[in-house]
Length: 552
Image 1 (cartoon, rainbow, N blue to C red):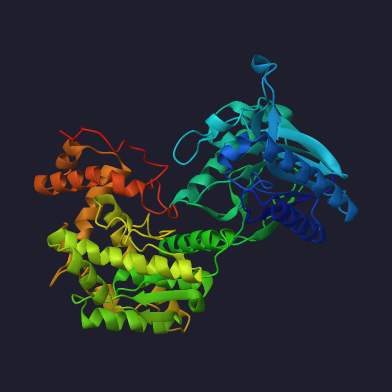
Image 2: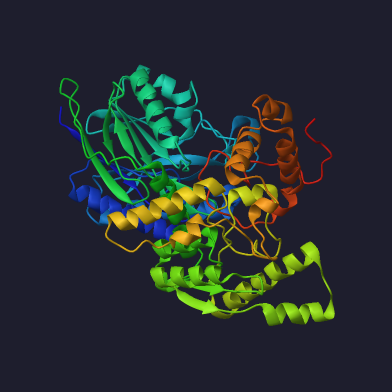
């Protein structure tokens, strides 16, 4: 029996771009054929992009995806690739017995294309309905088992969540004596998830007594980031091949005969945790900018750590020359902050501009006298108006620079520093902001480059500089303590009693919980940003704005 060469094509798709997604299938299939592959596997929902959410419910969208599917099959054959088994994801349709006479329901489908036609279809069984997923509401579940014959080898096919749940199609694979199990995935990134995937796949490999080939997509899609990292594990659970994270890649691996030692392919090294998060943030920003038709970004440069990190991320994502950094000093802005902003812009090659806000604030206060927090917020809102004005006039995407800790406690001005179309640090707490800034500077030094972030932006006490001598710790607990309490309350849903049992000071606990609970309305209006933790604000955490529940 001959060896079977498998190619896992982890590609970056865009929801709704049927032509470009189809073109990527053709290009990668040619590359796979040139590498001698017999079977090329693409990620979940390849043709449509993922997640398609309620687009799946539109019959017109399903018709368009189906037409694209058949067109790809014909073009593969016309290009001399008809012999190649091409496994792609798309949206399908299903009419169940209990819904006879009712409109067909969409399915999350894997489709085998070969010899110029659709050969086999498989509908995903397990439809996730937790965290960012809402598939149970959208799709109809499948109920069949899919085992392909590829050059005399039996290849089982499942989709993403099908291996995360016990039972279902995987439990029936050993009965079909498969030589390989392939999994099409649209698995979003979150910190620490990589080893969970490989451990799960290893368990399934032992169950079916066959290798598992796991193909995942890459790229940013709205608030999700897909990290790729496609891999193959052997029947004994050993890692045999792994693609790099956050890059499109074709991973080629050979399925040898049963009596031979399993083949090993390339194994991309794991990333440092801070590097992994940083690259996820860059990938999310790149995806949002490019897929929404922007070429450049604009943000306020305060000289502080958050705007500095966002600027560095932006330069890595779209190039420093496509970053517009605007210093908007007020009478409360320190000289060192203005100097740090200018220094940062020079380091990354940004288009740096200075627009003082004093005259604008004075004009407003000349008509309406404001004091205290109202006067502080006015400064932030004037800055937001400036950034949105530049966006409207010049076509830049406005980036909000707030972090997860600030968002959690409402430490941002609505319609002010919360202004923006995208928030790169939305799921990054303040403690991690400092760690990422350090990592990025160290990476630059290791590469022989100038660190992008001025050292003083990292070391000085954080301040909004909206009043004389202001620092964040005037209003908040120290960030290391704040982040620890937030992690317990937000990420792990621990209540007041659990927090006190951990030994946190009651005064700190009560203050943080009150701030978090009162800020839900602000979070609802904040721009979307890339999810990088297990629980991000947004689809992961859905709480009512109007509620009288308070932790006892």
